[in-house]
Structures are given as structure tokens and as C-alpha cells.
Image 1 (cartoon, rainbow, N blue to C red):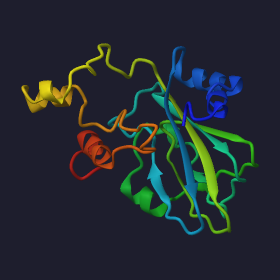
Image 2: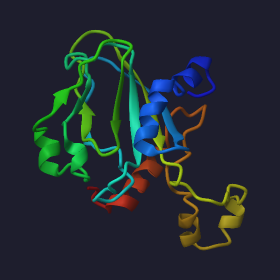
Image 3: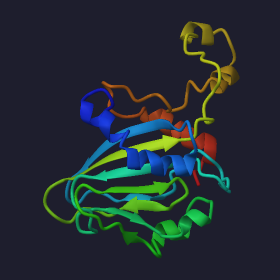
Image 4: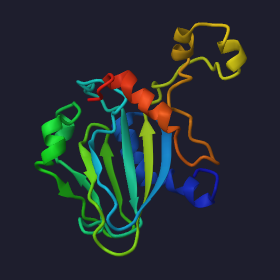
Length: 207
């Protein structure tokens, strides 16, 4: 979305939002993702998860990332608001299967239109299905620490060069991971690469 309309550049640089993100992530943080989601009535729930999806547990004591959601339609459980389980950021792990099934302790974020809801990458959250007419429209803005990236840029090495080398080297360069697979025209990540990335972190069966 960044670059499609000036409003998005303004949204990711709101001073109060940047102050909160810098408090969690330190100076020099990076914009990791800018994503819009639209869900109509009866849409499926987004399963309970922590945004630190690409890291094994236990998570570090310091925060890796944080996500801010712009509430463009009032957040209530009936409207399909984000659900969270308060206090789970202290557990520094992914939600276990029994909690993902029971949703014990989950509650809806209740917020008026125009609010910003922000949580760090350790918080267990998902969303409720919308039960009211209309659409749930949310702008998700994710920031990450500056150290989570390669130092060297190997993007100039194309497929022809990779074919002359081992599959291990392709893996080291991250060519099969879903990062950077979103483009201005695609609008979403490469789903096969997304599944592959999950398997790399959590094993064939997921977490």
C-alpha cells in the first residue's frame, strides 16, 4: 500500500505511533509490513497466534516486532474485532494447542473508529468473526528491530547463477522464503513460500 496514496505514508509516521514503536523496538526500527484487510459478515476467525511467527520459543526478553491496527470501523466482538489474551506477552512463547482451541481468557478489543490498537510480537491474539452487516476494514502496520536483516545485498544474483550452485546456497539467500514476495501488483505474499517459511521455523507439522 505504501506509495499508492499519500495517506499511507502519513499513517506509518504518526508521531505518537512512532514513539510507542520506538519504546518497544529501539531506535532505527524498520517498517516491516503495511497491510489492509477487509472481512465481511460470517468470515472465518483468524486463529490465535503470536506475531513472532518466524522465531522459536522462548522469545527473547526484548521485543522483536510490534503491530499497530488502525480501527476504521468500530471494534466490538460483534463487528469482528481483534481478540487478545491479556498478559500473554510475559510468557514469551507461542500459544499451545489447547489454548488455541479453547481461547481461554480471550477478550475483544473494544475501540471507537479512529483508534490505533498496538501490541508487541509476543501477545497472543486473533479475531472474532463479524456478525453484523458491512465490512471490517483494518490497516495493519508492523515495525521490527533494525538488526533482523542481512548485511549484504545479493539480489543481483539471478536464477541462472543460482542454478549453478547448491540448494543450500539458495536457502542461505532466502530465495524460497516469503519475505519480500509482496509486490505493488500482487497485493499479497506468495502462499507456497509462506507455508515453506512456517515449516522452516516450526517443522513439518507446524507448532
